[in-house]
Length: 559
Image 1: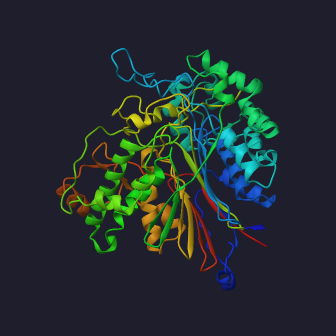
Image 2: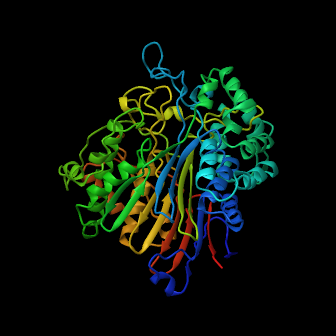
Image 3: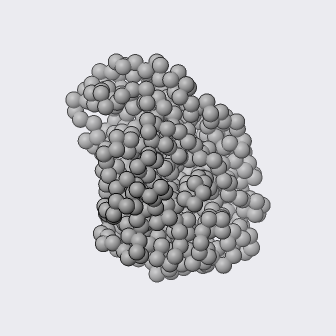
């Protein structure tokens, strides 16, 4: 393989190869396409590709690298969902590395004596931390699907942790936000003399390098057993958390059947519960398929998209949770007939006005990468530690920053979490349960094209993937345009359309208000979509990283 020219921040490479490749019965991509939220992480993927690995090896390398260079978004102390497509046999599976509630957790653990949610109890400190799943997922994917040893795939991350990565403006902004909750061990790593470091400062993490080395040497047991596991449990327990040794020793990833659906000629494969993403995405597309959106004026098109979002997010709150604990009628929720029933009451002239509530913070955490290799294997992975820098709590000597995913449970039925999402009994806290998520790694496929995409963004992840899916279905946008699309969002509660600057034209804002919609314009853009597209009929590969972020996309042309 030889690398194509790449540039930092945002790259789209469109490569055309001979038409003969497109006429093969089962054509293979002309190379690799990789997009991630950080240039060093994309470099890690390229390194593994050159070393003879496949997309799954690269996914292990890139996940671990993100844990090092983007600690505000993901990490070994967190988890995620890895959507895999195996080209040789067509198998598609979601590797569920979502965090689990500790065994001593219970449904009322964040309530005070009066039954009210204690402010920030599920956000800050070790009590907010669920049991991490990412280390187990890395070992699992390497063993089951990879071609290279785990130790080789973790080499880039270990190097980045040892040698350091440069502070960026995004790091500074989010570290400033979470600086007040850092414990001493976290502050020692992420701050300099107690202050947010200047741009370009190198952040070195020798303890994290040691932890990664343990995982490289011992796989799953390197994190979930032995002295490291004991140190993690003791560190959490002495500071008010509820972890016990068996929380770690009993953790296992799950393989889930992805959610599948269709929109016109596009086949959709997306995340399964405990993610709400796939069910909500397919439900919204099923509703929207009833209309020819291209025939509507802009304001009427936005109105119908918003009304589909409203209904899907309402069902998210009512029905979805960990499928190992609650019964979810996936077939019904993703059926065309059910979508027809939901959309029958959409009024072309007025909003449904189904709920109220307060606006909550935007999603500025989590991360995503997309990979397509030259065999046709693909990975879409969305990873998180929940809020920026997770719980802010690090166990000294481990380098592991713990998540605050317990906030993704419904601490009390009908009470919103930090992202304004509400939940009920299906997402109540229970020992060993995985909290509901919005992470939505997704494959889109037609006869002639494949897209691999996803994004961070808290509760807005699903609506961002929806808008990208609608655009992909039109068949005219490249990966660059897909990740650059303007964004708007509705999540049932609060009852308002949130939109990026300039995402909705002024005349359409007037029209939406006349229909009864409440509008909130964000002062800054949101999301950080990473997408790769393979135009099979043209033999073209595209890779693009969202210009709202700091990532990079690249294409490697096969020999």
